[in-house]
Length: 303
Image 1 (cartoon, rainbow, N blue to C red):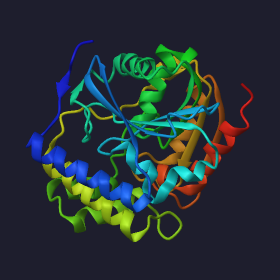
Image 2: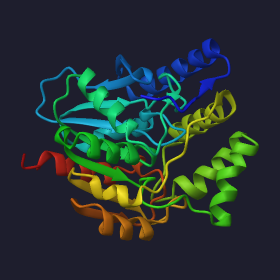
Image 3: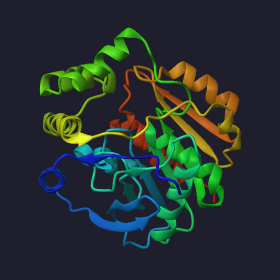
Image 4: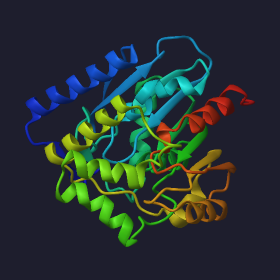
């Protein structure tokens, strides 16, 4: 696998220590400790968090996070409990994002992320699983669905970044660039309120919102992000051979839902069902009803 770029923490030791402390705060608040897996892949070291991963449950779910996030965001306010289904859960820290995995990344327009995701499942000894991805993670799921569809029971895409180009509206660009140009807690909070959430229907607890703001300030200011951003896969989506479910928020500023819906219906061969949630922003992986839906599909899935 050819390495396209490498991202990295500016002070590897201090920044990794900060992130470890951040994880410990989340574990203490949620009242649970995540299992840890560290595997070697073509992109170097890849970190995975596990929940119930050592249990002999029938179902397994593998999660891929969005850009500039950690997969642990899925469990803010014990969000994973909203699946309401006992299953093994693996939260993958995609290489090249601000987390404990190495920063090497392939060319995003190749299928290499799909080969990498296949390696992750193989190294975890997962023969078949449900997969879910938010934003950037949705693109990873689709690459996996092209490279190794036999390993995917079904894929769940949450406001994915592969169904249309990033929105270039003034409003979206303004609120996305604001914290990048000046990464203060106040600017990050403005971005979250305008693009990621849709209060009061879609929001986090005060503690989790504070944790997310701290993480984003840290990720923007301490991580040298050279990773390519998601792109519109267009005709490449026709090669996806995995059954796919699409979950969208109608207040997603980054990827407006209607265009994503139209393109998915036109291009994804095995698009099984779509759900559009009212008054939900881009960060749909933190929305309880979306996770309720995923858990219900998995629980009742006819394998």
